Structure formats: structure tokens, C-alpha cells
Image 1 (cartoon, rainbow, N blue to C red):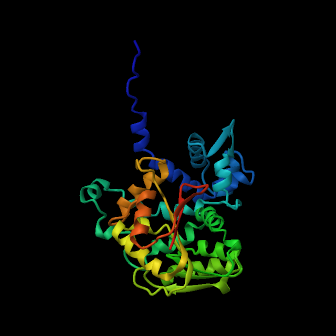
Image 2: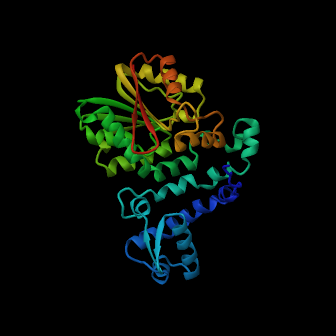
Image 3: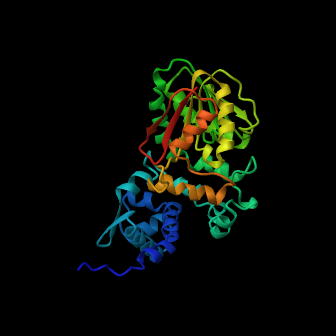
Length: 337
């Protein structure tokens, strides 16, 4: 007769203490520890000297980072895991350590402090609403911190649109933030003109990035609220990247209707989102994103492809609505007017 193993509390204990993983990673980023090890500091005394920290602190932190798989320990020496080398060493072109400035910011973390109360209400407390206000510092932090994570998606969008072969195109980038999506399209297509829409303070970050990436003369700012500012008309492409998830379906549909009015016939709306399967528990990261929206928005969610298609149809998009996978946990959805 088969026996059933007794329940093990390790999952419960590990989940309760999972915040330690987050803040150990952040400590490594803040100290420059991953870069120091990548540059050759391999044992505790050398690493401690490079990052100006105590040997005791460095030993314990490095051991913990080894336990969770970000470092590899052999004897008294440490080296970066492949993931840490790719994403946490500042010398890497794919460096993502800056994301901790936003994803672990106090106002984001605070919203999880009494999640039970949010679940009871079904919505975030008014004072914790991360989409309210037009010059909240955390959106400027977002624009500065999240660019590295978005670069693969920006390149994937350019590929999905075949933008290099598109000829002259007029692009509206809604909630542009760092501006990287429109900027990459402009880099790929020298005949592309981009209008970047966001709050004025955030657009300064986009302007800096456009200048650094050599397309400042083809990226024009449009300050204002995406729901009230006049877009104009005649756009070939409208970018809606990481934006719809902040709102409920009726609000998304209203915005998509406004987007459709701004597009030429045959124009395309490009939606970038965490898109879970219909079961809403797979894949792990897109499905988990709904909790992030519960904790910080009045009515946001992670929408399935069927839900996004329904919104686009209700907003007047009569062409195909296609989904394109990326080498990251988001999906590009392209709706044709």
C-alpha cells in the first residue's frame, strides 16, 4: 500500500521569510557586490574591501546569495551565477539591478503590509493608489529604473511590427515613461516620428533617453493625462505598453476607443501586458501580476488574451488581434483598426 509523506512546513516557513531574498538581492545591488565579484573580487576580504563593508556582513550576505542561487561558492571563493552575471553586474548590457529602486520602493512594499484589508475591500486604499496623481515621484523612479527590463520587449515589438521595413510612420507612445519603446522604433526606422505622451516630469526622462540613443530630433513630447489630452489623428501606430493593467475593462475600452480614433484605417495599436492563460494561474509571472494590481490600483488586473480581444472589439478594432511571445514574461498584442 502506498504511503503518503507527511506535510512539510518548509513551504510555509520559506514563504513567510521570502522577503529576505528580495532584500538580500537589493543589498547586493546597493553595495555593488555583484559587480565587484564580476570584476574579480572572489573572497570575503577582497569583496569587503571593494564594497566598503564589514567582512562579517559580506560573508553572511554572500553565503545567503549562494543559497538562493545568485552566487556560486567554492571553498572560500565566490563567483556570479549566470543570471547574476547577465543581469546584476553593472558592466553587463542587460543589467537590471536598477529595478530594485522601483519594485522594492517603500510606497510599493507598503501596499502589501495589510493585504487582507485590501482583499476585504476589493480595492486599494485611496492613500495607497499608485495610479493617482500626475507627478508622483515613484513614476519618475519607474522611468529611470525600469528601462533595462523593457529593452528586450522594445526590440520584440520592433520585430513584430517589422518596423524597419515600414517606411515613414507616425507613432504615438501613450504613457511613454522612459520612452524606450518609441525610441527603439525610431532607431530601427529612420523615417519614424514619435509623439511621447506622459506627465511632464516623466517625459524629461524620456527626452534624456532619446538624446542618449540618437533620436531626440524625432521624439516630440506631449505632456498630459492619457484620458483627457488630445492625441490628434493620422497615427500609424499607437503604443500602449504596460498601461491597461492599471484599469478595469470599461476604462480600458474607453481608452482603446480613443486610440482607435487617433489611428489611420489599418493602423495598429500595440499592447504590451502580462497575459495569463484562461485558468489565471499559469504561467506563473503573468498570472501573479494580478496581485500586484490588487495591492496598488483601484480596479486593475492582468487580462487574458480573450479579455484583451473583447476590449479591442468593443472599442471598434475590426481587424485581426494577434499575440506575439517575447523572451520575457510579457506578451505583445497587436490590434488592427
